[in-house]
Image 1 (cartoon, rainbow, N blue to C red):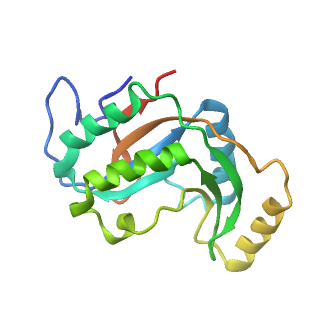
Image 2 (image 1 turned 120 degrees about the vertical axis):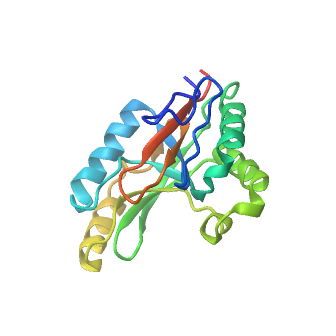
Length: 187
């Protein structure tokens, strides 16, 4: 399923469409993990701000000029690679929200390789140390965030294995992300 075209046909059959929007790269989850994480996000994220589904961001802002090279690198990173082992470790307090901390040495290695390849064009946010997490609440009153954090910190079912099914590239236009392509790990 690598290179599945998005709504504007940004990738496919060797044709690239020029687009000024920055690119976001995120890891996608297996079905059961996605349903659980997205359910938490829908339950705790302010509905008017929840424009995207649960995700694990690898890069927040890559220039659209990289689309061809990014496609090749994401294909290479996933085509012959088993899904990276990953775990959710704990709830993290973000001040005005809560996230679940993710640990995956194999996914971190993929991210590091991509960061090295694109080093000269990374934004300060993407150049900074990567702290993999899934945000399930954001932009709420700090007291609300503290209550959710306390609740999740006391829940032993939060720490668990996490299925990383693939990677995806999206255009960011200030609202919901626009899918460019999905790249599934080999089974």
